[in-house]
Image 1 (cartoon, rainbow, N blue to C red):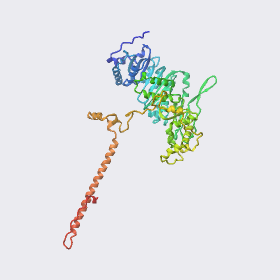
Image 2: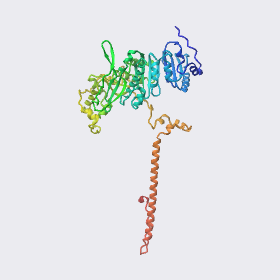
Image 3: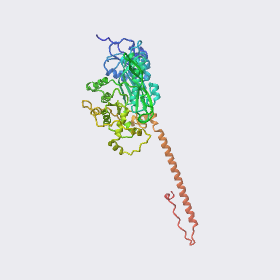
Image 4: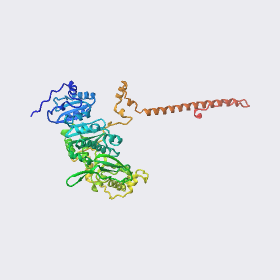
Length: 563
């Protein structure tokens, strides 16, 4: 059957006014109309310039409509202008999908898209500046059954534990500092989304959860099921972490008990640790709740990898190699092992040089445990081995000649008897570790894929990328020519002008003090020279001999002698 014809598109100059006039601030114009043709509806709730909306419309097939929203009227005008520059007409046109822009509060738009009054979106994309928590409750209701919710949070300092009270206020969880802080932030966000969904009889299935650069981004599928919602408490846990050696244990909030004819969700049994840490005697801090179910759908990740490795379909992606490397690292992660330990951090606690990663992981594999790395940290050890087994492996490493040879290169002070290193090394390992490499671990750590191609799993950031240092960030951002032009126009950045203000004041005060001391020294020197010259003249005049021959006058002292 031929698809129904769309209404004629407005002119380019009338696009913004038509969309705003026909649609309320909280709903796109098409929300009250029946679907004209099949396809997915996508909402870019915080669109700003409309760049992501343009990419959706021009690069993704199978879309019926893309709605771009922003609360700022200036941003709304900008995105309408950008749509015109890229050949996209609002409301229709020759492009494969409809593009609509609205101006209004994103939370109000999400709430207005709930049935029965509104039409849900198949895909909702939340990418705010900072936290996405104010929009999560509306977002989990605005996604269609089986639809996709994509959430980005850039407040990593909050999620990683720098401001735990702010994290609890925004996400309902208390983070703990540690090497696993970025994965912990991902799991806090997933637990927060699932708690919002459970209030409305829905649950989430994470497809992909990644930490990239300075933010986290999750892709979750939403479905409705009262039975599945009852299991939500079994997917989160509290975190117990030692304050001295960072050893941790997880306490599930609830568990499933088989009653014969049915299964019942009951409270978890704990705590999983003693009052003091069994390894070093430190106290435990309590954090969470965290999402401890799998963060990724490995079948979904493998499909993404296969799509990216197809050069014909994705050869135009500039970040293709980096995406392949990151997804390869994600695919290698153990799905049922939350969080990880850091090999370098544990060696730092024990004041030991770090062993080779392949040897350390192989030692655990030879004892029958599974190991992997994490895409968030190349030095991570994600394993199902108990924490004691990992410490035992390092105790064995401390006795090896290679470790002693590396320790001998640096002067080490004796360990304090009250340090965590002394307590950990005082215990004897239950089993001797074998550090010979295992082929399975070698393949995992290899920089080549199965076909022999090179894969960079942890690529370095490009130059002049990310936040610069405090004194050079603005100088790196603006070249000398741009800075000179801005200064000539009187448009000098106040932040750049104030860079190093305190140090300049301190140096000026030090220079003034030095100049004062030099002036005082010169004055004292002049007075001393004049005094000695006068004394010499008086001595010559008063020393007339009997023979009447006057003694020749003495030379005035030089400056060096006076000093």
